[in-house]
Image (cartoon, rainbow, N blue to C red; front, side):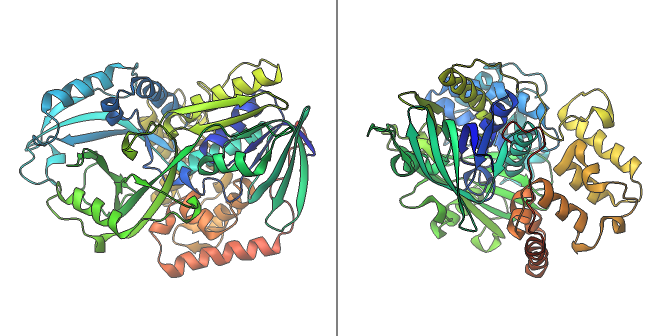
Length: 526
């Protein structure tokens, strides 16, 4: 662990990882600390969409929507293996919003920002469109528009990996237990899961602790002369999702309008499932204990069943998750109406500190860019932004497919190229590994000619070679890290198969006392 750095970033969710990546890429010495695994909380519990937020137009959040729409294609191009375009169908219910209002909204959605990859919206006759077949016959008319899909937890890992490759030190399962502000910097105490505490000196501090951002400023970060560090209040809103067996065969997603004026999504998920969400419920207490309630499960099933021919019942749920969104308190009575925009609040009265309030996954790159620019201003060192147009690890497919064309077709070309180079590997395995690792797939495959060359198959389609890669390069330490964050293989495995993966990870952890993620020799933090 480096004793000195330029910036200490607290929080290993999408905002913290994105900020660490941007800062490190500008040449600053960065340490990123996360109390659990990367993306353990909010950032792995989203609806997994890269979207502008069509419904936010009703709340006149035009600036937020435009900013998010501008980011969609920037992100899709940066990592086509973990993000791809997705078409959404909104069945028209005359008892909800009138058709003219929806047409006006999606027209505005199409034109608030430039589109190069995503097709525009259009009306559809659901009596003849494939998306109409799973719906109740009363839905005869609908609207189709474009947004994008993202593997949210892998997005966090790729940002952390890029930060590491630019020289940042990434410490997972490490808690910042104290941060003392001095006129010339911060002294922070970092405690690993073994209980050992280490001290690090930082010129600036970034508070990207998500749901814990306010608590961090009020309890952990200590001012130099009694000045208040926390000037904002967070409103913690729980969003829960359910996963059920596949409700439809086509590749479109649905956006459903509910009588309470909210919306829910029903999205193709992991080939065999449908993801339905989300709720908006005020949370009191520790965000770490957030879980879906029976009431939320019933609500999601009821609203989905208003549209699908085959009802969705609580007994159908095979998995569920809940994430806590740290939204800026704006005195709104409706949790759905609380702004999803972000605010960066900085203070240079003594050592610089920057706190991230709010935000959404679609705008993380822009948030990180703005945050890094502000940190530079606080440090008196202007350094140019660089992430717009930059690839995330595995996102540059040129070595495999040549010139990029479209993110969705580029990925299919990658799968074909990998299959041609490794003809002895099962096609489903090639596709899954290409989705996870993109152009870096050979870091897992090496020279494998058959699946047997990847070592023991610990669970169906999961071999020792991949588990070793995840441990050595992606900070995975437990079965849950592998099964629910680095992948969603846990959905496809039995309890016994999941237990075997966890046992392998535990044994590997106990047998290897060496540091898993030594800094590179030229790391600026060394």
